[in-house]
Picture 1 (cartoon, rainbow, N blue to C red):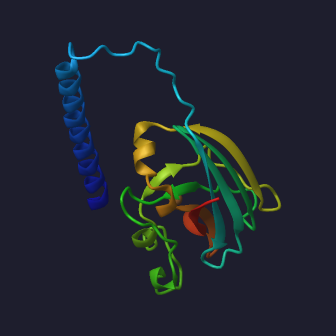
Picture 2 (picture 1 turned 60 degrees about the horizontal axis):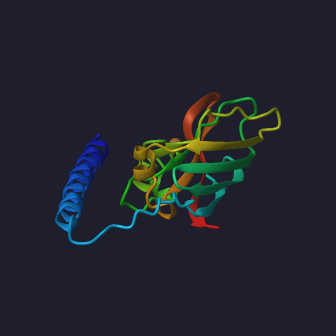
Length: 196
Ligand SMILES: [Cu+2]
């Protein structure tokens, strides 16, 4: 809860900064009027560069899950390809980018495990933080425990804010059977996001 409030406050501050910036810009434009003629060449919308990232996923909670998540970020579009193996077959597996804006998310270690040696969703949160961007729709593993998932996501301004800086975030995969019950939230694989 505290984290969410912090994030809200950060966003409010950023909005205020944006308004201040806008005012400054307007002031400059107004003061510049009449002094020089402004070129009337039509502004071309530049194509934003595409930046490639990859997260190599390692198993958590001795799940045996491995895989990769490849991301190509171009402005507010993100092309994502995720390949996973070793999952609980025929079950849904949530897949997220985790981390909070301005903090350095990491994959949890044994230090985050509870008395039973399990890293729960809450137990690992001090390492990986909140969900920054969900990769949805949430896929279901096939009968062999594999997932291949590929989408182009259109990011909202909030998404763009939440995933900044991407290399300070991690990709987290969820969902495993524990003590005979399927738990959708348990972390099963994690990987830090790196420039590809
Ligand atoms: Cu998650």
